[in-house]
Image (cartoon, rainbow, N blue to C red; front, side, top):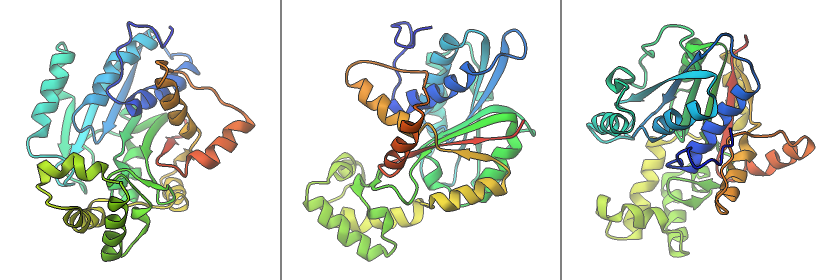
Length: 297
C-alpha cells in the first residue's frame, strides 16, 4: 500500500510516524508465520496515548497480512506525568478506537517494579523520548529482553549524552554540563541569546517570573529527571541483556522531517549502503538516536 495514501491518518508527531515506519519496515521484510498473524506491541512510557493511537490507525492499513494488539505501559513515580493522566489517555484512545477496551490494554507500574507481562509477550516494544528519563537501564533492558518474543525488536527514540541538542530545555549542550549551578549559568546565557522556546512554552503553567528563575529551576529538573548515558554505555547494557543493538534507522527520522515539509510521508525505509554509515556518523550527534534492540530468534 502507498504510505502517502490519504486514507492513512496523519501522525500526531513526526516521531510517532518514524517509529511506526520502523515497525512497518521490519514487518515488510518478513513473511507472516500464519494467516492474519497477530503482532503484539507494547508502548513503554505511553503517556497520552497518541503514539498508540497512530499505531492502531496506520499499521493495519500498511500491513493487512497482520492483526495488531497495541498495549501501553507507564510509571506513576517518574515525575513525567500529571496525576490522573491515564484516564485522559483511555478517553482519547476510546474515542479514536471505541471497539477496543483500552482499560485492559493500559498498565501503570512503578519505576523499579517488574513489568506485569509473561515472558515473550511482545513482538515489538517501543518508546519515544522516554529512555533519557530511565535511571536504571540495566533493569529496563532486562525487562525488555524478558518480554520480547524470540526475534522480537525494541525500538527506542531518545538522546544520548553525545547529542548536541537538549530537547527538554530546547538548548544546545546543557545536558553535558554536570554541575547544576554551572548548567544554570549556561542556560541563562543561552536564554539571553534567544533560546527561550521551553521557557515561553511553560512560563504560564509553571509561573516562571524570569529566565533566571527558569534556568535555576530547570537546571535541577535536568539533574533529577534525566539520565543521559553514552553510546558506549548503552551498547554495554544491551549486550549484558543479550540484545543485539543497532542504530540503523537514526538517519531516517531526519529524512522524514525533511519530507514532511513538502507533504510527503514515508512508512518504509531503505538502506543507503555506504551513505547509510556516513549519515549515521552525523545524525546521531544532532538530537536523538533510534536504537533497535533485537532478541535472537
